[in-house]
Length: 127
Ligand SMILES: [Zn+2]
Ligand SMILES: [Zn+2]
Image (cartoon, rainbow, N blue to C red; front, side):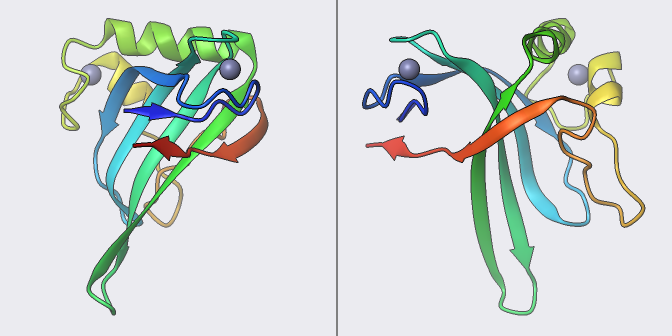
């Protein structure tokens, strides 16, 4: 699975190199935090894949957003994912999961609030 790089726009050069699954919250079904890297220009960033529940319509929507973040924040996330013994288990109780799962008052994941986000972009997949 490859994506369009927001920096060099080279088709399909953006890859997901690390991922950690987070538990469902009040707003999302599947929730995954990903580290993305371009094989052409070496752009690196984070991406969040989230399923949104629309119980009224009984449908599930999803969104996949990429984020440009400060190098120190990216390094911190890579470190957290690397230290998790079971990254694809949303109910893992390790310190990395505990650190990344922060919910707001309405029970929704706070996303990247603690990180320095410099911009975001849509993750466009190349079939
Ligand atoms: Zn690139
Ligand atoms: Zn974990």
